[in-house]
Structure formats: structure tokens, C-alpha cells
Length: 519
Image (cartoon, rainbow, N blue to C red; front, side):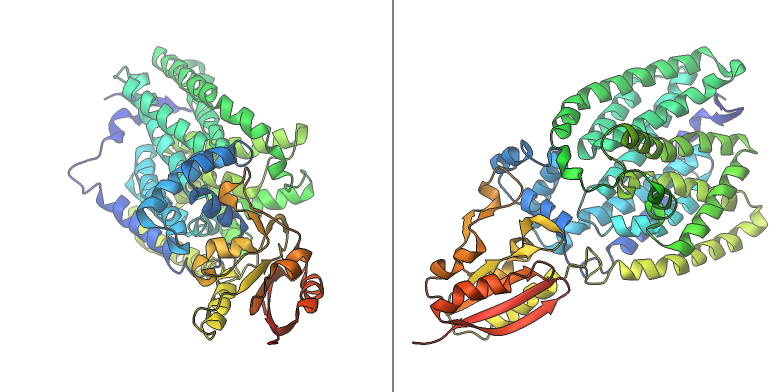
């Protein structure tokens, strides 16, 4: 039987094969489906917010317009926008379809994590890791986010599985090049979807170097595997250099990231994987630290840690270090793809229990995890969970009020600022909830987002509404509460005979209806 040495232990090189005597497909499927349900449940309740609006505005524009956009902004998300464009061609756009791929990706990542846990240790390690992964507050968040975080996490797990399979085959002298080719392909796709995923590849290099740290483990096979990883990593990095260079020219997009300081400690410890859930943070770190301690006592545990620790630590340390010498690059959500590695560490002390205790303790641990994550899960599925946006309520209000208007009446609309996002206007509410605004005339619009060279549209100054309303019976104003444009719009419309007929506030958005006096 061929074995692979890792930090003083060995792993059966054939454990990557599923055992047909045990329904090996069933645990990953059950865990994956459960994780998908946890992620997708009530994900339609929160309002779409600014970042998700960027996905919608980009992925719903024609291919030439998308190509023009990424030459000026968001090139780092070009691949993700392209994939979402294809998805919207099939499923159409709605807030639910925007987030569904993320929920499915979370489920697929949980399923593959079961497979990975079995490769590294045993089936029950994989099952516990997959279940805990699905309950991590960071994971329940990414499953409701119409961005690339969940897909990136899925690709990180898939790349790690392919890396292990390729590495083990190289060590044992089996044919490994198809696995390395698959590894490069998935790593390239991961880096294209989210550039920081290249740091997972670097973490794999640390894993590959572990056997070489001990003199008696520096076998010809281990050295051959290290060379194969170096070649695969070189191909991946070189292929991603053009994307990295293009992204560097657009670095002003992330000038909102804070510099490294004392708050970074809290971000790493609490926010990064536990999303400001203090109780789950204590629970998670206790399990993870216990997992490290337990893992160091066995060959399988050391092998698992040799994979999980670099996966979790290298991206975090790398981004923080880079932020100290360049522009700030580290944000807790940018390393969400390390969550599976944390779940593997958390699973180790539970899976290591004797058989007579395992079932009861596992049930207790998972029930405790459910109880601790529940408050965050619920909060993440409230209307204003995302950036205090309530755009769905604004759209519902406008649609309800317009339903009482005479048939055929064409209103005008003024889109004011969006709080905390000075580059956009509240037109993104209409972009993300278009049905409520269908038929409204937009007199200030100069160039829609789909025809612009950037992410958002261009419009005339809001003060121009007085001479562009063209006698519309009703003019609607949508404006942020922190940047209230009511006085400007009221002053512009008053000479034309308009008066305020109604005012509503929905979270950080104010809606005002002006009605023109009948002459």
C-alpha cells in the first residue's frame, strides 16, 4: 500500500477513491443539500444593496457594453459578471435568481468539503466539517450575497481536492498530469473569479513543502511533487498577471479599505469567519484550537493541519503584510474562502472522539452551533440586513402608490444620491427593482449605465428638473436621508406649480411625491 509522508505521518494514497461498499456519495449530497437549504432560506427578504447592484447593472448589460465597462472599472470582477450574464440569460434577473448561485455554491462547497475531509482523515471528519461549515456565520452570509464570495469558496475547495490528488499521485509515482492540469484549470478560474484566490495556490505550496521540512521525508517522490506544484503555480500566476496589472490600475475602487491598525485584530478574530457573532467566535476558536492540539497527536491530524492551516493563514497574513507596504488590501470578507479550512480544524476534536461518544457529542456540538448562529442567520435575512438598504420596500411603496393613478398617466422621477455611495444615484433602486418603475419618465438621464464607460449612468444636475419635467402630473423624488435633495427639487419645481403631496422614509431612502396643480 502506497503512503504519502506528511509531517511525520502517512496517508493512504488511495483514500482519494470512493469506497463502493459504503454509499460514499450519500453523505456529501445530504450535507450539500442541507447547506443549500440553510443558505437559500429567506434570502429573498433582504433588500438588494450597492455591491449587489453592481452585479446586476454589469451582468444585465450586453456583452460589448460589459467589455467596455471592465476596461475602466471592475475588471477584477469581469469573469464573475460574465458568468452571471449567462445565468441571467437562462433564469432572468430577480433578487432571488441573483442570490441563488451563491446558495448553490455554498451547498456544493459543503459537499466537496465532506469529500476533502475524507481524503485527509475519514468520513466523519468530512461530515462534521461540512456541517460546521454550513453553520459558520460568514458562510450563512455569503450564501445570501449576489457576489463572487461563495463561488470563490467553492473553487478553493475544488482546487484543494485536485491539488491533494495530484500531489499524492506524484509522490507515489502514479500518473498525475491529468490531475495537475485540472488543478491549474480550477486555480485559473478561481483567480479569474476573485484574484485573491491565487493565495490559496500559495498555501498549497506550503503544504507541498511540509514533507521536505524533515530530512527523512525528502524522498524523490516528494521532491517530484514539489516541482510539479511549482510548475502548476507558475502557469497559474503568469496567466493571471495581466488581470493583476489591469486591476492595479483600478485600485481606487478599494480606497474605502481601512489601513492596518488595532481594529485589524478584531477583524481577523471576530469578523473574518464569524461575522461579528461573539458567541460563535468563542465557540469556533475553542474548537479550532482544540482541533490543532488534537491534530498534532496523529498522522492523519497532522496531514489535515498541513492543508488547512496554510489555506486559512497564508491569504490572511499575505494580505495584511501587503497592506503594510502598499495600499490597504485586507478586508475580512475578502478571505471568506478560508472558511472551509477553519471548519476542518473545528471538526478534528469532534471526529477524534471514541465511537461510543461520537454520535452524542456531535449532535450536541451541531445543536450548539445552530443555536449560536441562529441570531446572525435571522439578522442576515431581515429587510435592512445589507447596508441598511430597504430598496425593496421603496419599490413596493412606489408601485402601490402608482397603482391608484389614472390609467395612462406618465409620471417623472428624480433620482437623488444614495447614502454612503457618492458615485451612484438612487437610480440603482430602479435598476434592481425595475418592475415598480416601469413607465416612469427619467428627464435628467443623459446616458444609461449600459451605454456608459463606467459602472453607473450619467445625469443632469438635479436642479434642472424644473425645466425638464415637461408638465408631468406627478414627479417622484428618491433621495438618501443623509444627502437630502428635497430642498433643491422643491425649489426647482415650485415655479412650475408643483407641491409636496406625500413623503415616506424607508430606512436610508426618502421618497417624495410632488403633484402639479391643475390650471
